[in-house]
Length: 386
Ligand SMILES: NC(=O)C1=CN([C@@H]2O[C@H](COP(=O)(O)OP(=O)(O)OC[C@H]3O[C@@H](n4cnc5c(N)ncnc54)[C@H](OP(=O)(O)O)[C@@H]3O)[C@@H](O)[C@H]2O)C=CC1
Ligand SMILES: O=C1OC[C@@H](O)[C@H](O)[C@H]1O
Image (tube, rainbow, N blue to C red; front, top):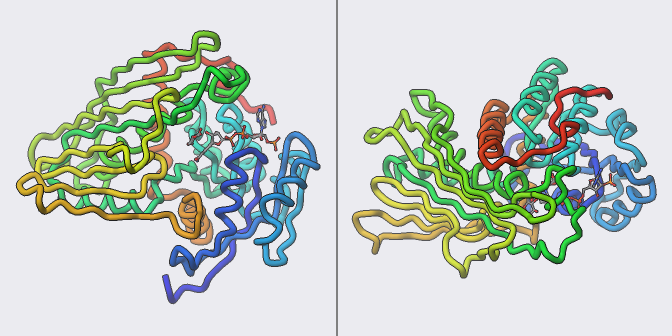
C-alpha cells in the first residue's frame, strides 16, 4: 500500500441513529492508526428523515472535532442527500425494513452504497438491488463489517492454507444478553414492522461465520461449492410481537475442495436473551478440522483473539490477538474496503460478493420459512415506487 497515493472518499450518512454515530466516529479515526495509507475518509453529508435539526445535532455531537476543517451538509430528507454532488458513497443505517427502499433511492441516483446488515429482508430484494447496481454501474456492498476484521482475514487464510486440515464442522454462538422484558414493543428488536427478531439482527453474524469458513474459503478452490442443504431450525418467539428471540440453525455445507470427507456441518445459534460472552467466557466459535481446531474468542461480530490447537499435539497450541486500534469500534476496515473498491472502479467487493450476500439471505429465507417468521407484505416487496 505504501507507494500508492492516499485518496479521499466523501461519505454521506443516511440516518442518525445508534450505528450511524458509531460508524461516523470510526470513519474519522486517522487511518495511520491501523497502518492504512492508501485511503482516507471524510463525511460531507448527513441526512435525517426526522428533521434537519436532527442531522445538525448529529454533526455537532459526533463529528465536529475530527473533520479537520471539512464542512458537512445537513439534510432533513434522504432524497436531498442522494443528489448531493459532494458525496461519493452513501452509508445506509436505517432499520432493516427500510434497506430495500433506501438502497433503491441511492442506486437510482447513481450513488455508490454501503448498506448495513442484513442487506434486505429477503433474498429477492437483495437480488433486485444488485441488478439495479449493475444497470447503473455503481459500487454496492453489504456492510458485514466482521468480514473485514484482520482476525477474519487471518482465519480464512489459516483455513485455506490447510493449518487445521479439511474443515468438517463449525459451531457459532452469538448471544447479546438484552433484557427484552424491559424494552418497548416498538423497539427494532421486537417490532415486526421493522423486520425485528434475532435472526435478521444478530443471527446473520453466525451465518456470516458459517459462510466465511465453509463457503467463501471453498470459492477460492478449484471446484465450485454448492449452497448449504438440509437446513433445520429451532425458534423461540416473543410472546406478544412474535419476533424470534432465540434461534438455532443447522445445515450441511458441501466442501468440494476438501481432500477427504467433502461435507461440513454448520451449527449456529443467536439469542437476544442469553448473556454476551467476552474473552473471559471462552470461545464463541469453534472451527473443527481433521488436523486441528481454530477457536475464536469474544463476541462473534467483533472478536479479537483466536487460538489454534493442532490435533496431534495440543501443547503446540498458539493464540493470536487482534485488538481494535485507536479505541475504534472496528467499522473502519469495511469502510477502507468500500473506499478502495470505489476508487478502483469496481462494482463489488470480493470479500462479500453480491452472489454470496444473496445466497446467505436465501438461507435466511429458508430458516424463516421453517421458523414461521413472517413480516408485513409492504416490507417484503420488491416493488419500488420512488
Ligand atoms: N454493524 C453493526 O454492528 C450494527 C448494525 N446495525 C444495523 O444498523 C441498522 C440501524 O440500527 P440502529 O442504528 O441500531 O437503529 P436506530 O434505531 O438507533 O437508528 C435507526 C435510524 O434510522 C432512521 N429511521 C428512518 N425511518 C425509521 C423508522 N421508521 N423507524 C426507526 N428509525 C428510522 C432514524 O434516523 P433519522 O431519523 O435520522 O432518519 C433512526 O435514528 C439496522 O439495520 C441494524 O441491523 C445496528 C447496530 C450495530
Ligand atoms: O449488528 C448488531 O450487532 C450488535 C448488536 O448489539 C446490534 O443489535 C446488532 O444490530
